[in-house]
Length: 228
Image 1 (cartoon, rainbow, N blue to C red):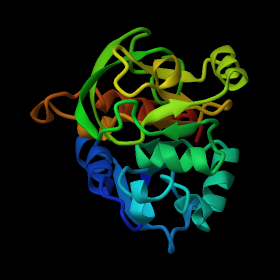
Image 2: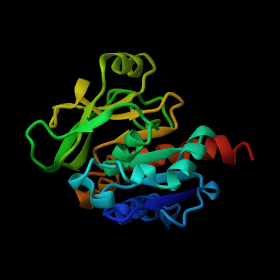
Image 3: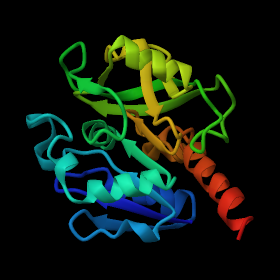
Image 4: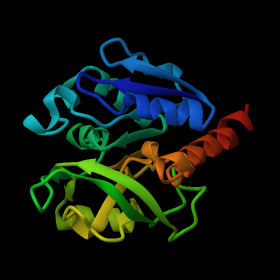
C-alpha cells in the first residue's frame, strides 16, 4: 500500500505520519510537497497536523484549503480513495468542504497537549475496522482550535449516517456531542483532532492509533489486492 503524506508550509506532524505509515505499519510512504503533488498514484492520502500558512494566527486551514492540491483531494475523495486529515489536516478538510462543520477555539481558550480517551463510535469504516465497537483508546491531542461545531441539522445528519467515528470520553475542548472525529457520507474521508500517528508503539505511551492505519491496510488488501 502506498501512502502520500501531503506537506504544506507550516506542517510539523508530517514526519510523524510518515513514520506511522512507513515504519510502524511497514508500508510504502512518500512526503509530497503540496505544490508538486500528483495524488493519482497513491492508495491513501494523509494530511498531517501543524500550522499550515501560519495556522492559528489566521483561521486554521483556510489558506491551505484554497491551494491547487485541494482540487486533487476532492477528485480522489470522489473516486473513493481514503483520505485521513489529523488536527490541522482535519481543519483543512472542513475549510475545503470535504467534511461538514467548523472549528472554534478550545472552550478554555488555551492550547492543550495531553492524552485523551476516545470512544470508537463506529467500527464499520475503512479507518476503524480493526477496533471493537465501543472500544476506548488512548490518543494524544495537541491543539488550540479543536472545538468542533456544527448546526443542529448537520449534527442530525452525522448521527443518522453514522459519520461520528470517534468521541471524547471526557470532552476537553467543548466539541459539540463530544465529537473527536467524523467521516464524509461515503465514509472514505476521515477528519479527527487527536493524533493517532503519535500513538503507534508502546514507546510513545500508546499503540492504540496503529489500529487505524492497520484498518486502512486491511481494507486496501481486501478490496484491491484480493480483487486484482
